[in-house]
Each structure stands twice: as structure tokens, then as C-alpha cells.
Image (cartoon, rainbow, N blue to C red; front, side, top):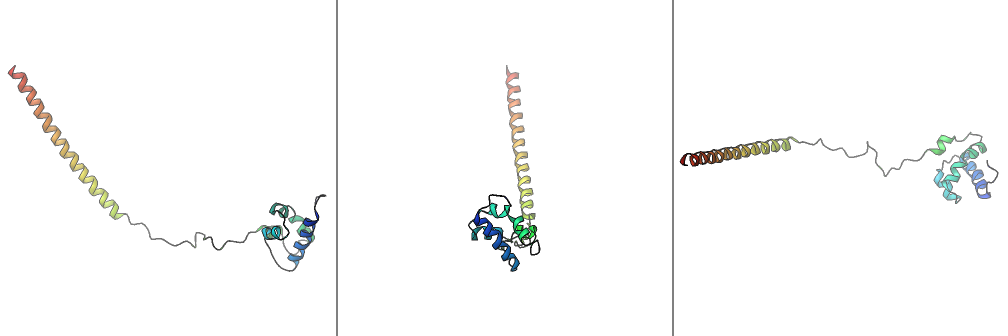
Length: 129
């Protein structure tokens, strides 16, 4: 323990040790709130609490353990979802691609016809001169 520990912190260490001896296991946050101390201060004096109890009632790891918030689901508690069926999407995509290819072929055919007409017109125009 450092030399400049205030009276409230010393009382917290003694009372925390007594609470642990009684079998209760409060969280660091609960202890800090009860004695109007910061969580940091309580955390810094955990070793003093353990020394006070001779390590018989609790160890540092137990004091640092945080309770699990039951309101926050973990991965095993989340709702199971059905696998996504994308076969319909794939089929409609294939159909859309086929339609685009047909449209592109039709446009290409029209362009070829127009190009040949222009070439014929140009050739005919050159022959008449």
C-alpha cells in the first residue's frame, strides 16, 4: 500500500475484505460505487484487499472477472437464419444476360446492314462520277 492512501480507501480495503470473508463476490464497479471511489482506485488496491484476506477467500483473477450481461446475446443465442436461396436470382440473371446478348446481336446486325448500305451508296456514287 502506498503511503498516501486516504481514509475512505483504507475503509474500503477493510470492508471489502470483510465482504469477501462473508462469501459475497461484488464487482469492482459495485465496490467503487459503494465507497464513492473511482474504479481505478479500487483496482489499484486489489492486492491490498487480497493481502488483508491472506488470499484465502478470493484471488485477483476472481476479483477481475466481470459478470456476463444476459441482455447481450452471444453467438449461440442469436436467432438461426435459413441459408439464402439464390437460385432464383441466378436464373433471372442468366435470362437477363441472354436477353442482353440477343439485343446486342440485333444491334450489331442493324449496324452491319447500315454500314453495307452506306458502303454501297458510296461505291455507287463513285461509279457514277
